Image (cartoon, rainbow, N blue to C red; front, side):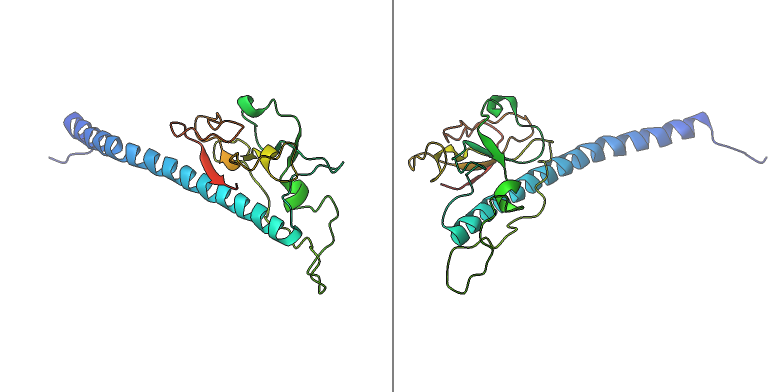
Length: 184
């Protein structure tokens, strides 16, 4: 007798095997994606912090002035600014100093050793993996709106919970999921 097709029991066994494999593999894939997002955000905050440090080395001050040459409270990138930090309206984008040279600083290198803008210090500044803006609580850096060298300044990704757990005055919440790079 020639058989054409599968019996119901064979189909059920194949589906059971596929279900078991999916149950084993799915958590591994989800965990890998989560780890990749964390690694990207950690690398991005470090890269942004290093770009700010390089700007300061070249020009002798932090990139914390607006078009009127007044100090700002916060730097931010593209993406959504988490609501608990959205109240700080005295802010500028990272692009203003680190990418575009919007203040028209003298370009370098200068043979006389004068401070010069040798940027761009970073390429396009994208959103963090959760579509939030990268942030800096820049208020306490030299030249910003309220310099205070006793306060910690961070480059921050709000992380998966999309809430900045770090206090705006620099107190890091170790129970939160912020990804940070310390500037001061």
